[in-house]
Image (cartoon, rainbow over all chains, first blue to last red; front, side, top):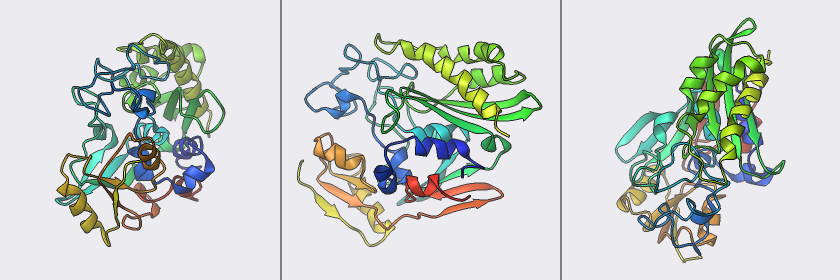
Length: 246
Length: 86
């Protein structure tokens, strides 16, 4: 895992604590609920995820931890899984099983943005479960990295995270896959960044203009405005680290 | 914590059927697997389902690496996957 899919291993080992990692399942990781403090505290009545139609206390509240991509007036809660961000960058899929049988869903189609129903977070139908996760073997998977920026060094969720997987052509990037965590209402791929990285060297001066495309459509709500700059810098560092792998 | 009934079905199809009966209404029934998030949500009264349907022992926990790629059973733990000698 560490050699062939380093981004997965790194995302997992930077999640939670050893005790939690020994107990928590891969399927459950992908289905964990948001860490939005207004969702987690029933003392606040307004939360469209917890009580549909009740409003969002985070938009006018303490929103340092919240998302800047894929938000709307109904919900700005960030998706919490590190694993999902790594899998998003590797074009993984989930096998879903229900009473009607089995189907395969690409991870990027599995999660939903809030829309009018923030309490519905995935395409899982009634009774359906995640049965397995599949990840294609690619050269990029070997040259991948998960960078997690957080408020303390362990047992903490991401403020901003980046999963980067690269195919190199000598010293230049042939193809890049980049996904972001801590900033989106679901794991967030940035195709415009990926396109701009193609052909670039690993020099930060070449990477920075490409990373800037991540800010397209981003909307801060006050306390979380800093994430828009931070995620661009994190992309630069994650791509550099991934590209430096043999 | 709100009281709930814990269902421990013998096989996956029984679990799927139990949960499917509740339809979209997760106040009636929810799944629990490793429980590391669900137990927090129950303790904080964020989730108050009438029934919990346990998936323990019902899902694949295998980790297989082949030329096509990686297949990870949903019940594999985070620790097992992170340390797997792929």
